[in-house]
Length: 241
Ligand SMILES: Nc1nc2c(ncn2[C@@H]2O[C@H](COP(=O)(O)OP(=O)(O)OP(=O)(O)O)[C@@H](O)[C@H]2O)c(=O)[nH]1
Ligand SMILES: [Mg+2]
Image (cartoon, rainbow, N blue to C red; front, side):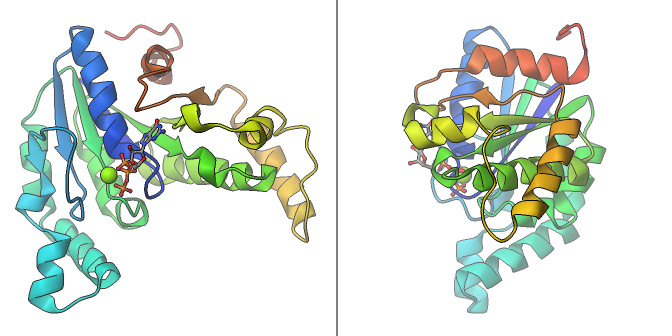
């Protein structure tokens, strides 16, 4: 069993990719289960086998405890952590070929608190994170570098292999395309230029074996590459069994 933790900044396409890549896997003959871990989700494009909103819902907390959206989200994160076994057990009972886990819109409540790391280390089988980059956030080389750093932080926090994916590639314009292609060549401007140069060195070194995948969750492009990259994340020979 392979578990994919779909992670990324708000609106980067996590839920859409969970649905469309899941459907692609099903069309390829895999058994797929879907999990929603976003307590703030309003509408889900897929039918989850486990939905954390059965335990806690941001909207309910806002009404019940008189909280604003951010306060309610933090409170929801606390509740998910406290009731971790109630989250883990139903997920652990699933045994598809691929388990696709959609994570909260605000990635920090999954990543920077204990929920994500605990879950990643508790799940059976192979666990990999798919980190989504949104081209809309990629206007300058520095932007791309910050997102790449965040991808490394995902790997560091969760302790599982992470695949970097630029989603919404159907929306790539000339400038985001240039940022992607010339990332290693372009001047990193601004006051933080020398810091950026240093960090680029770190990224180059750590990411030597990684490549950035281009996907469109809505058009369904790049899925074969993503599928192969998942295999390669565990095994140099690409064997998915
Ligand atoms: N053009 C295009 N739009 C996309 C793609 N993937 C997602 N979207 C759109 O981006 C918006 C956000 O998509 P979601 O799947 O809800 O993103 P999310 O990361 O789950 O959002 P949160 O859970 O709120 O953080 C929706 O309008 C999607 O239709 C894509 O590949 N191309
Ligand atoms: Mg979502």
